[in-house]
Length: 271
Image (cartoon, rainbow, N blue to C red; front, side, top):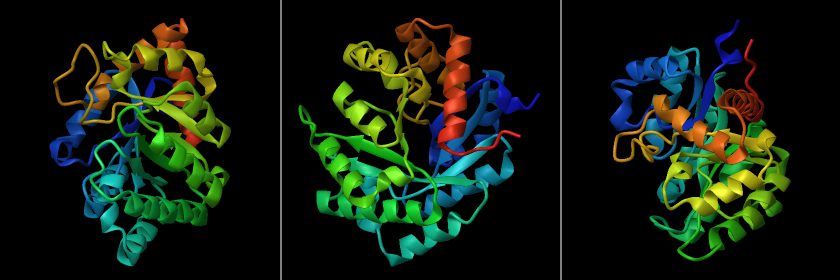
């Protein structure tokens, strides 16, 4: 049986991050031992150049695929040169999506106009290559502003033509349903397990299982009971167990359904 036919699938892990890259092989081995049969190595988040680390890991490991993109924190780095670099990486057969890209109004490390521009350009790139998007979206405190702007940009750019994943979802039920309606699945991270995340668990319980994914967002957001540790894909069962609990379903079913949905969302052929 193909290994991807069983086990969990980590839909978002920064395996090429400086904290993980040097021991990525051992990290991936621990994930396999924990029942994680595949992972998406997300290239964005550490500057444009480190997208290359995610691509390299996808080349080296048969159960790892990569995304490339410009994170909203790095939106001021967007340029014609950046676009050409992403265009080149997207030609690689193991690169399956553009991202993570999006809008972050919580930290706002880059001006909002720069974030919107970089996102719009990356949506165009995803449409050109016919690959899905991995979206980061975080609103300012007590607001829905980033979600409102994101949905507006989706509608203006035809993002629904490629769809993708809203990673590390922390919005409300209305936002989740609006994203689902535009062809974007919802992925939950270790935040789902946090003691103060009761509202998020209610959102997760109200969403259809066939549109949900699970992730670690390694090396960040280690789930309960491992909070404070450096996160890695081997910790994914804790996230999946929480999702299983809120849906009242067995863990094996959650593993199967979120794995299958991840393969569909990223258009990965498991054979």
